Every structure is written in structure tokens, then in C-alpha cells.
Image 1 (cartoon, each protein chain N blue to C red):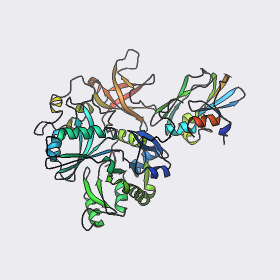
Image 2 (spheres, rainbow over the protein chains, first blue to last red):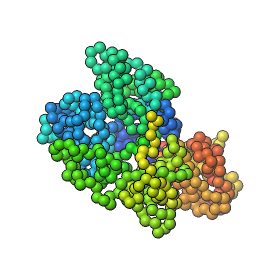
Image 3 (cartoon, one colour):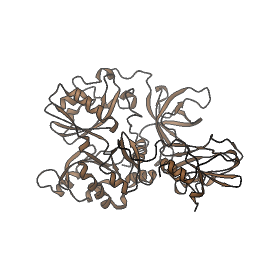
Image 4 (cartoon, chains in turn blue, orange):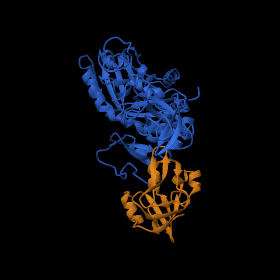
Length: 393
Length: 123
């Protein structure tokens, strides 16, 4: 065996622990260091956890994610300037996937932004980028009448994902709508009407929880933003209500799920040196919105004609290409390198290797045959449209 | 049931069972756990000459790739076809049915005892 990546699992003082840490320990989770946090990588089997989300439901702890609130009379205008999307056009109770761009058009982070009030937004950032996102937002919004608060330490995040997620949530006691009355029937009615990328200001056991129909697995599902001290009770409630339908899932299964769903991961498919249109996210940049925004000038001309573009690759057999493996236009020693893999795995759902890669645009057409260098062996792969997996309608 | 305390170990998370001049080699439960679900195993064919410290095979999980080193000089006597056919054996029975290769060893290097290995991985 070789380098297993981490030292023995001694808990180090500088590592941050999730509010659900004790719950994970009791469940026998294995942990991994992730952006300074100790988070569950798997409980028993990442394959079983992956399949549980595709077939029933999985429960994820995402408390390491960053939650940043932007609030004030000019919060909409401030975010229209700070972010690539047109946030002023987002309705209250709606969410939007957007990007924080650098002036040169590179991606500083990808974000989900919820409009939680007329003058209030919740910005969800990747754990590793939490501080840079908060700093950039403070800097960019300073000319506006809006304030930025990094509330990450006061927010836990649980995701319930999979075809059984709705039924489990409907059966779970303790939810109500926020405000006087706190009526469970009103909550269930609101849940019934809740569309994808919408959220409900709800209560769980009398405390605020934002219930959002969002996720990162390719399945129907929900994300729950709530106070850290409430998270263990909600986690246990889903487990008790869901029974065998709900399986706790770690970050390993989350990665294979999001890869099958063709969703980019910051640091792999997205980064400072990658422009949104290279990663297939050109539509996320709202060039039609009025006024200037950070990154507009750099993205207006479109990508250079020879800039690598993100593609899906599907192969046969069981050997998967991994992050950093090279892509060639032929099998032989004289073949030219035309790209590099950003993420790859043996797809648990599809049963064959899949990968995302940045390749020369001349080789990006679906149906093109390319060759993955898997540790010295060239493996034939086909360019395919993303996502690899789409949930049954 | 293999008595894991009687096995010898390498710092690369492999175990070695010596029987005469044949060394049976697998990876430890610690390594299997760290790798996650093993989905593919590539092993050298019988008759292959191997050198201690060199890569002779691969163990892939959904998450990552591990390399199998030969801890000894010698020749492969047998590769475990059951593991090639059912890689999950590495997770379910790393010290038993999940063994990987048997090597006719010319000589044995110094290896770790069970206690020394457990200390290495902090257990």
C-alpha cells in the first residue's frame, strides 16, 4: 500500500468539529480533514451510502459550509454588483446558483444564494472559501447601504437527499411555519407547493430553520439551515422517522454523487484560473443585467477560441481516471496531450468509469474518442454530454 | 480466522504471513478502511519476478488509488483471483479471503510486529 493521505486519526486541536460530531462518532463514522474541519468521510461503506441516496434517502452533515448574510436596503444592488448573477431578480423564498468572479473573470467561488427577505440574502460558500467570500463581499458591497455578516459559526447544515426525502420530511414531526401559530398543516401545505430551488422559512421544535429544496447529489432533496444546538435533534428525527429509508452519508459518497450529476466542485472543475464559460457555466454570468459587476469586462468577450472546455468522459471496464490524469488524442506514444482530468471515479450507479476533464475545444464534441492515461495505460473514453446521470422523471 | 498478532507488517500498511519460503501478502484493515470501498484490484501474474519496495499492483477504491508494494524479493506464486473477481473482499476480510499475492521469497527483510504496526497507525 502507499500513501493513505492522512496521519493516524488523532484529533488535532486546530481542527474544527461539527455540532453533529458526537452523533457521527456514535454512528462509527470515519473522518477526514476538510478545510480545517473533521467531517465524516463515510460511516460503513461509501458505495452503500451512494446507492442509498439514489434509491431511498441519504443524510449529510454539511455544517462546514460557510453561511454569509447580506442585509440592508441596497442588498440587492450590492449583490448585483458583487456577483455574476442578477440577484435583484430573485424572488423572496427563491435560491440561485451563482459565482463570485475575480476582475479577470476567474472563479473565486461558486455559491448558492437564498433571498430570505426584501433586503436580506443568505450566501452559502464552500468551506475552504468562506473567509475570502466574506472579505470580497464586504469589500464589494461597501459603497452600498448593505452589511455583510459571516454567520457560519451560528449555522448548521443538514441535507436529506433522495427519492424518499420528501416523504420522510412530510412524516417528521416538529415542523411548522415561522411566525404565530406555528402550524404543522401550514408547513405541509407550503412543502407541498415547494418547487426546486425554493425555500421555506420554517420552524423545527419552535426554532427557526430554513427548509430549502436544493442539493448537490442529482436527486430530489432538501437542505436545512438551523442553529447548531438544534442540529442533533433534527438529524436523529430524520433517522427515527425514516428508519431504513434514511442512511447517514459521508463526503466520499457526496463526491461520487455530484460527479455522476455532472456538478462542478470548486478546486477541481472551478478555480481562479478557470473562466465560467470554460466550465459550461456561461449562462450563470448575467451579462444582460444592467450596470457593472465584478468580472463583467473580462467575461464579455467570451473565452479565447483555444481555451480548454469541460467535458464528460465515459469509459469501459473498471479502471477510473483521477484528478490530474492526462487526456490524449490517440493510443500511441506519438499521440498529443489534449486535456487533463479534473474528477474521475468508477460510477457506482452506472457501473463504468466516468470523468470530467478540461480538453482542447477541437476534441470536445460528444462522440469524440479520447484516451485517458491511467497510470501508464491508455484507456479509451468517449466524450459524452453532462450529466452522466439524470434522475428518472 | 487469521491471528493478526502473528502476522508481520510493513509501514506501507501491508501484512505478511510467512509459511516456509512463501510469503502471503495483503493490506491491513486500517488501509482498507482508509481507502474506502475497493472496486478494482490489479495483481501481477504468477511467475512475475518482484523486487522489494517496488510497485507490483494497484488497489482502487471509489475515492482513490493505492499501490501494492512487494515487501520482499522473489517470484509471484499466486495472485488471488477471488479478489480480482470480487474486490470488496479486501474490505470485508482483509486478513483472510482478501489476501492479494503469494511470493516465493528469496529472503525476508525486517518487518514490523503487530504491536509495532498498531503503534505506527496510532491504535
